[in-house]
Length: 187
Ligand code: FES
Image (tube, rainbow, N blue to C red; front, side, top):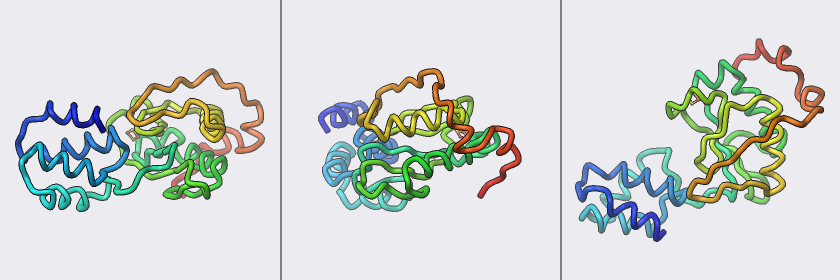
């Protein structure tokens, strides 16, 4: 919260900065907390209700803390044409939850995301807000298992994560070959 408060001070004190301030809160904290709303209102010199309005209007803003590790799957076209749906299915299988859900213990989540212009990394996911990609099928299995094991968790705010060279040999047996899925459309 301290870091967010400091960064907020760098934004001009103009009501037009509202969305930037909200995005900043979500990037730094993972969600729009009541304290964040209070800080933004004070900084932009508006009422808390004036911050609450846009914070709840846009579906992309979260109002509860994300799971410890949130994987956001990119549903954009560039990611999908190079295997994004395979990546989603692998995370669903490894986490044991569907897109839009958290695991039963709320430790992991697999949520829907939209293209943010980092298509050169396709197919990609965000791990706690950090872009990870491009993901091969094997990379996806490896990453999902590392996150399940609590390794390399990216805390809010972002920290980089590195994907080591693929080492899983059972990925094709488990999920099918790249060729097998090439003709897959959205499902
Ligand atoms: S389509 Fe996924 S980042 Fe652009």
